[in-house]
Length: 178
Image (tube, rainbow, N blue to C red; front, side, top):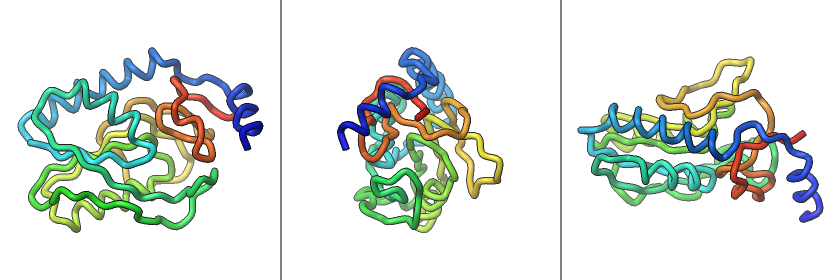
């Protein structure tokens, strides 16, 4: 497995450098600071993928906020998605809260749509979402994100939280498998 990971890493194409990603996160923070300044938001980090993005974004947000996490996965260490599996739900009550969902990538939109629906079912009064990456796909998605850092082509990506078979989340740029 490690040989495969090293091969993927060395043959991948760098789509967005660390500096480009950091600039996109800073711009997102400015937009979120303006939109949610008086909302007392609860930020929900979609783990594992959203951890790097959420950590980088949190240090740039200026409003009072709470942080919790949620884990819904479709990939289970694979490169294609299946049924959603709920692994973790927030401990913070969502009732009458403004929720901002933070995730690494908006791909087909199935997971984000499910997390948004969960938040509404739990009584959130407003549900926003921020993604570091949105992939352009030819087919329509069941949902959209309110705040998008970078729009990119539809390729298998890793880095800044996105993984290749549970590896390479720690790459300091956005890479596409060749």
